[in-house]
Length: 364
Ligand code: KQY
Image (tube, rainbow, N blue to C red; front, side):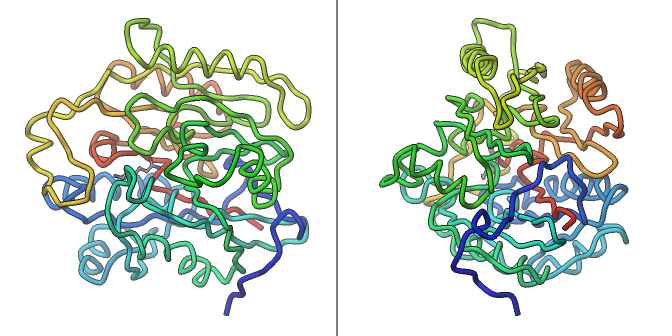
């Protein structure tokens, strides 16, 4: 049985490694709720299966699936994917799963943050989230990893680390009154230091325009490696994304990381702008308390929402000319990995992308 520890990862000598450090595998959760995924989640399931297959070439994948969908998912997913039964509210393991931390002696533990469906009853995306709040604990049981129950609301997509003491995040999300209204910036920083083992927190302002997570950092910027950041960017000054990305660039260029390095920033093109079609909106079953899906809504598409797996990068694609440009830039930034595109639109329609639906299990 795994234990719930009363100390903190930092006090015990643990840190969250960079995503580019070696993994033992990646976790995902199978989509099925019809008030978030159109057409009973069938197109999304195909997209998730493609992401799982792309990652499975590089490392073992575990898919958590409800009892109802178990046989179907088992049939659809390849032999490289382990399927386990789990009750969840939706399928965003980046946010509901544990943040794994490791030490220098070969031990691995997990941080189980409080989860409130991206804002609870003040702008959250669905009205009940108890099963999602249990996902991290269940994964830690399966992985045999001891657990820290962090005393704050936080989603894994709202933080990136360089593994060398630096955390990157956004004010829009972590300082949002619908997450931890009683905590000031300094108190949030203390929690990040304690639970991620970092020494310095770098704050961006807003996340990607119209991102329903309240601006998760993983949809606008990420570490390529220590000292190097990829940033979602558009040159179109008339697009609302331009001012947001320009502010992020200005901040990043004025910052140093925990080791005192200036950051090198690489721009990734913005796909689109992209909008939900009438047909796509009509495919979602409306439900009271769940985020509404409307035709014409701007979608927060971003090539920064990729997963760094052991031997490959898995990058969302949108059937646009910018797809090839993004893959080419990322190929240059990650010369030691295959850079592989997967269909990203169906995942985007649900509110996130490849990074949001995956959670790496770092090698201890
Ligand atoms: O982007 C993420 N990390 C999660 C998106 C959740 C959207 C729920 N509809």
